[in-house]
Length: 503
Ligand code: FAD
Image (cartoon, rainbow, N blue to C red):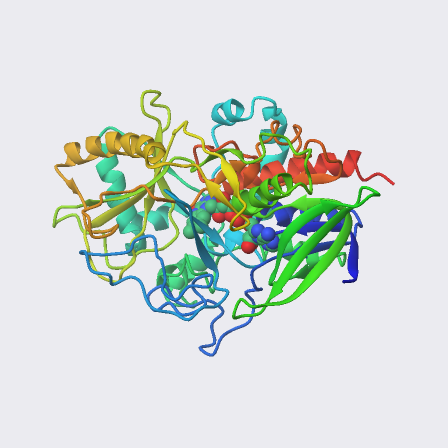
């Protein structure tokens, strides 16, 4: 097959890929982005780009015949999930032996489906995770650059205190305070001005209409509206959608060769394409990038990849759980889907936890307080190549998850005891499961900075091959990760464009 050549290729269009595409385009380098998902810019028959959370259709999930929402049940009834037809929907749940991982699929990657929480980690914890990175430069230059490009903003505190849409958050804050715990506002990329207009009835509701994990039709500054719009605006960037990169190898002259499968909306491979480039940037996310590199090493197309490729993977200590409130502590039938507050007990060195106060927007009063706890779980797992399937396996075990659960339990046992409340047993399946310990929203690591790559994301052993996404983060960052991923990608691109691409 003919080889389609570009000076630079970027695999994936999430945070890492979007930053690479913009900075390459601005530097005048013609760049092709290959994204396996679709572009989410065309309305369906109902006039909406994304489907609703309460009545999900084929647009909700990546080639499924039934949705797999994080909260499978409510009062033990499977009221949440729906039969759908297989289609390249926006949310994927990738199953490994003891852990499944939620990821976004489409132009914008995780930004299309995530909760928008845009948190900068504590400087001391960042320095602990990235001892070789100059924190002063990160906090002085790259974190501010990332926040400004992503459109990070904060909820107006006066509106927060008065609106029915955040009653669920205020109740959880009161319970944290009664326990002697600190809470903190969490910034977001959802436009809070827009949200206030939704509440006032002057704008079409999105965050206030339950929209989030299957996409927001309004209000959210996802990457297609920020980095990727600017990248396309340079005139140097092209995005090919529905093309999944399967193999990477190196030509005799040191340039890169890629094999990509183009699929149609049934998932059928309609064309296998060959691409060539001088500079290759991997932004397929922790799962996508790591799988490509583990496969390249194990099948012998890039045999000199470091032994640490595939290692250092973690869940950011994610655990989800719900508490049952007293009848007088109503959380409200109306809940915004964008979280704005966390319980911050990270400074508790005996049991560091940062717990986001999450919404459960069912349109009915349910007295549930829901949380996504981020715990300081030191467990790490590795990916291994499965020659039978051509995919990867993940060595994460239930014992690894148990470490996160124990930490979350320790914190929430305190909160329950101070407020005379109990856990909810009906949210995560039929077996009275209190802690959702079998999925993560925050896959991190696999090609860790300074191990699989040099200190700037240059892949060891292979010049002009770079990693720019969440696989660089060594398994834990203590807060929601996309601001960190974006800032690290900015740092990589600044260095690479200054040193590697000079004519
Ligand atoms: P991704 O954003 O995952 O992008 C990778 C892209 O590459 C995807 O579009 C994928 O389809 C594509 N791709 C992968 N492999 C290939 C291939 N072989 N060929 C072509 N394309 C490929 N983080 C926060 O900071 N705040 C939050 O509030 C938050 N909430 C979340 C809620 C949910 C439901 C989920 C799923 C995640 C959430 N996250 C949140 C996590 C955040 O979205 C991720 O950390 C982030 O998207 C990772 O960025 P990335 O650049 O590493 O990869």
